[in-house]
Amino acid sequence: MNCQNCNTIIENGYALCTACELRFAGTLLRLARDVTPLHDSLDATLHPGGHAPVRIQTATPPTPIRLDVLDLLDMLDATARELWRCLDVIDALDWHKDPRMEDLEATLIDCAGHPRLATFADAGFYMATINGIARKIDLTLDPPEQRREIGTCELCATMLTAGAADQWVTCPVCGREQRAQTVKLRRLETLCWDDSRRGSAAEIAKAFTDAGIPVRRGTLNVWVNRGKLPSSPQGLAYCDVYRLVIGGAA
Image (cartoon, rainbow, N blue to C red; front, top):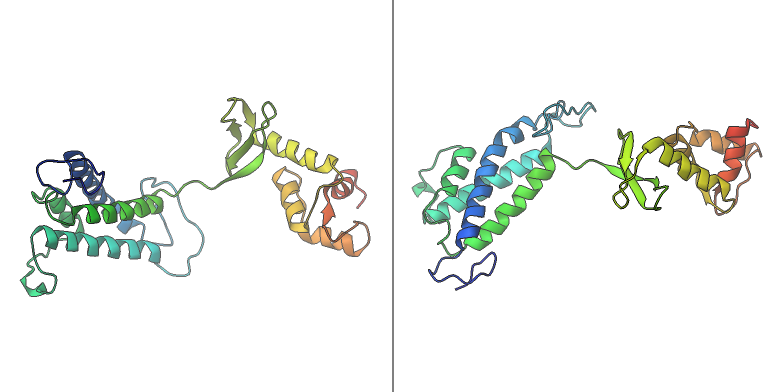
């Protein structure tokens, strides 16, 4: 018989091999540990950020609780209790025979230590389901930092990415460390020296502002309406905006 998760051949007739059983139990125990930070993250006005309690969400929320976190808790609770019923061979339709009244954290811990965790028929299915929920919870508690392209490395021309608060970036190819602001300015210089590079007012304003030269989209539109800034169906030229902003012609 093969393991339902990794397809390894096992001879004891179990549904999961020993390694997958340990991974399954470990995931259940990790989810039990995540129940408390998930409950803490329900408050949408002060989001502690899961495992990074110094991160604060200051924007005014549309609801007093984070509905995505509430959905995750409901999904985890329903799956954990269903798994426990399968392990204890309790028919879901005979809910009155289910004596379990413990909380979610205790249910996950009990499932992790259950002797039938690797032997019941649907072990592989529940392991895949639990793993999927665990990935969603990890993204909720520790969301990945938003990074975007800021320009190319001056040494190897590799596109570099940085977060909003990053002051230095390191090229993943050549390892050269550069100031993020310098990379942005170099990219803007490349755009402005090529008279064929064009973009919308919003794109150009963002490129200049990111490089440390504040330009408003509304200002560019006013210059177009006044005839100071040429416009074409392809958009505005970066070089024309540069002449007005840097040269003080506006």
